[in-house]
Length: 345
Image (cartoon, rainbow, N blue to C red; front, side, top):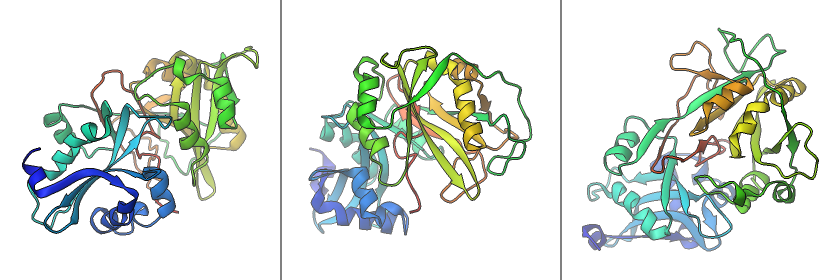
């Protein structure tokens, strides 16, 4: 108990709070925000049975909702040791105690029992200093890599001023995993631990059962491997359409990173077969040597080439994504946290 508990009831949300949280998002986060209006997506993101994954601050004197910190569990098959923060907001125009939002951030681990609170999509001017100074987190900018379609000469989604010379690797094959049962049969996620600690139930929920987006899940196997051989790596990809053009985006990776260095030719074939402009890969903590070895190029600061990040609505601009974490070995990919979530339905 501290001074905040005298004024607020700070607790985890339940299903009874859903309407109030959605109204709060619409009123105080952004008018018309998809999570303030679309119940299907809100419940997919945050509801687990009778629980809503959010820390609330409710003023005792008025019984009014004054602040929220929504979060996403990194595992679905039981208690999640790692979680990602999502919408984090305290009312600006009300007379609330100073640093109420910080207090919500401090409570999230004790209330949930999780070990790590991770985040992606930070505001470099506000959230990054808060996470570094007050929470003693590490903050970093994700690296952004891309491979262009080797047979495309004109680009509409990307803007390409400089064509870098690369060698596309061989040695591994992409094997589609069409269902969650295919995934479990091909890849033992428990044998490939990484932080955050995702489980098979999370993969099924996040990529096979998403209510709006369609994902492609592939095992990466050395060329010549038998169909019955277990996979030691999995990559998840999403196609994104912009008018009459489309791109591919790597949104998650599990397992042995060395195998990624050998899959370049297969990825290039996906680009050619689908007439995609490029495939890109945002990451933090991955061994960049393997990405470059596959035939990718890194988008650097002030790069003349533009590899867009925002598609709902489409914005032809390079975008940096910042993350926060504590364990040195933490990995981040594009679908982690809320960074691959629909903005428009």
